[in-house]
Image (cartoon, rainbow, N blue to C red):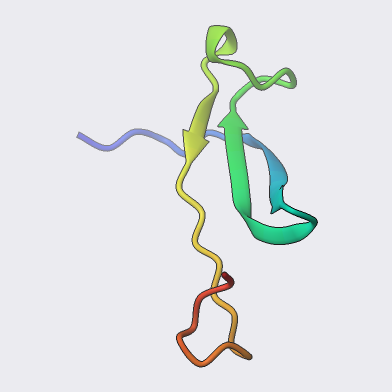
Length: 58
């Protein structure tokens, strides 16, 4: 059974290690405050670096 789309707020954060970018952290939620207690969730985020021969942003 499909339901109607619901707008979600998105908050992104960047992971740094030793001063170098290592990845992206994304959280989503249907309310202005994004937290687990407000029905928030984490989402998988894939970073692709086209300038890196293996395609990863590592």
